[in-house]
Amino acid sequence: MFVDSIELKLSSGKGGQGCSSFRREKFVNKGGPDGGDGGRGGDVWFIVDKNTDTLSHFKGKTILKAQNGRPGMPRKCTGKTGEALHIKVPPGTQVIDKLTGEVLLDLTEDGQKVRFLKGGIGGLGNVHFKSSTNQRPTYSQPGKPGEEKEVRLELKLIADVGLVGFPNVGKSTLISKISNAHPEVANYEFTTITPKLGVVSIDEYRAFVMADIPGIIEGASDGKGLGIEFLKHIERTKTLLYMIDAANYRDVVEQFEALHNELQNYSQALAERPFAVALTRIDAITPEEANEKMGALMDTLGCSANDGLAKFGADEAYLGSYNESETNPRFVMPISSVTGTNIKPLIFALADVMNK
Image 1: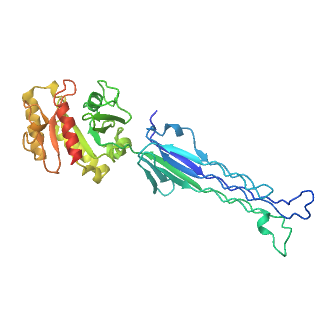
Image 2: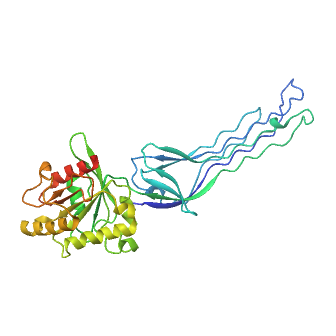
Image 3: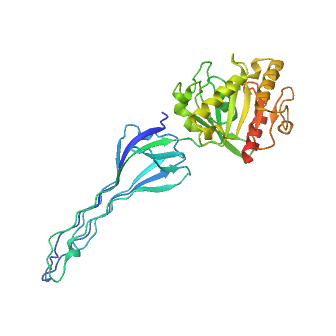
């Protein structure tokens, strides 16, 4: 089960009670106070673990608490420190204050370890309160309480390339063909209902991560469909790849503008991210129709035909564009995941964009 948001109440451990005792041994007259201090309460730590990719292991849990410190003991023995609470989360997890909405932690690096709440200090034993005027103190300190915080954990996947498109335009087919991801592929809309990550190999030594999210529909930024719930998963991507369906009943320019508007409404920063465009499912139409639609798309985006595509080995039967400068769109390319048309050039072009 994929879970990307969870609410928790976190508490560090309370400090242990100080001990009130007196030394009692044979041949030791008036041994005096010897009560030890209470142990410190356990801390709460967040640990980033790349072997986890969801927050589902917190499902059904509402309160997580570190262990309390143990009470102090006679003979000036300090109580045992409470066991710390280690919370493992996947990379890309944000810890947000439930009451104020403030982002307290942004955990992105594998192996990152952050202390979130400190345990309470243990109370002092009665040995600390002896003096010339009070040689037999009978009191000790209670331990201090730990810290508490109500938080919301939100997962935003970390990927290099994020796929953006309407439902059923071939996003899942593409990521299943070029990466190790195995999303469900079927001939109906909203086949993908949870985000998927796939590692795409460029060559023997290089690779990048691609994210596939559920299809976006018009009004997604206002809560329609599944889009707004998962748009946050492409907020961290370096590059966006717009997937425009060549065989769709909607005009290709209309598709692009609708998708771009939804991203703008959701986040202006996301809409200004470096992006490229792939015209998908060209196997379902004739090359002439594909070139006609590519021409309309490139005219709208201000691209020149076939600029720079030759170095990636793109199919010369189809129009395309590659932008050598760092302005959007970085390239426009027709592809077919079913026949494999321009799939390798697409991978190399995406890698080139990320290198820049």
